[in-house]
Image (tube, rainbow, N blue to C red; front, side, top):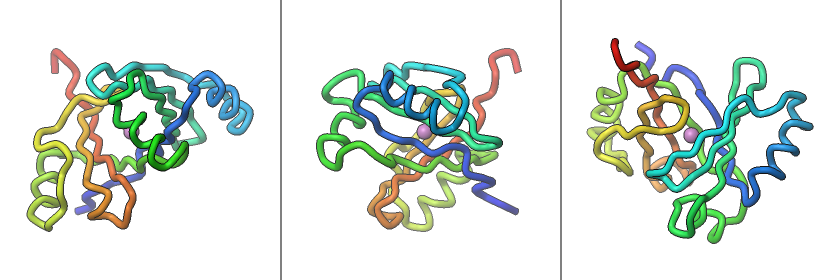
Length: 140
Ligand code: CO
């Protein structure tokens, strides 16, 4: 069975969300369809669609945000690739037992109603990988 079923979105770290939204609206030919703050991560996100694919722009909302630290170290740019999974706990266990270090031991709430987990970029050729599963809706 397929484990990581598709690229769910690509995350790009930006300094100025408003300016980058204008840029990506021009580039993709469609405006952002959603903005969402993830308080726990210290990020403000903005999502774009390009056909079946999504781009997530991320701006830090505080100096200790992982995005602020990332930009300080490496500048703006490609931050992570997110893959969809059907069962995030099973995938976390599979990857953990395969020697990948997970940046969070339990799935956490991400933007866009997802349960997410990040894998240490040192274990994937310098690319931060996000696993994401559609979170069960309340009432399900
Ligand atoms: Co993401």
